[in-house]
Amino acid sequence: MSCNISDIVADETLFQEIQRGDEKAFDVLFLKYYPSLCAYAQQFVEYDDGQEIVQDVMVVLRENREMHKFEISTKSYLIKAVKHSCLTLISRNELQQTLINPLYDNPQLDFEDPDFYIVEELSRTIAEALQ
Image 1: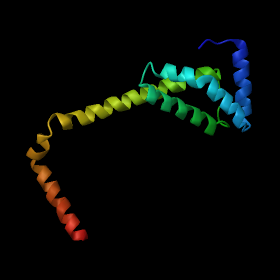
Image 2: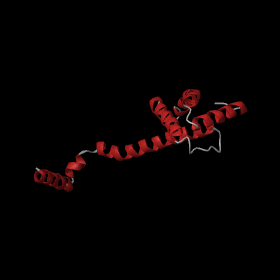
Image 3: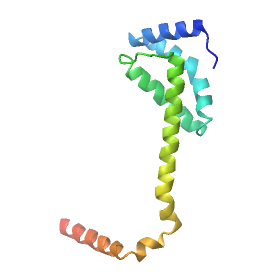
Image 4: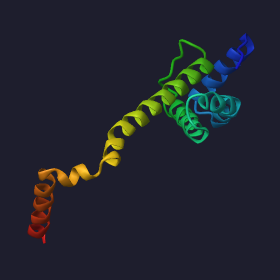
């Protein structure tokens, strides 16, 4: 994703049109960056996840178009937003694995815990009372 002055000016013009609600300008920006942003995201996450992330970033850009003022180029903003979203997904997946793996590693622990049966009995009693 190389950058030159004419690209920056064209992107700024496109984004100004997007801010005015021009859907065609958004389509042009989307089609211009979607393939390269997906390829960039694939460095961090699976291709399908990368596609979803890029789509989400573009939707957020479009939905919040009136509020965006870029201190950097549109392209740099998109790259940073995609990278941030990829890293967030990675962190979320790692946390999920940290929480779930112990459950699958030793499922017998639940049944050996005396509180398991108390909770189960309490749940059954509540269900009966509600009926």
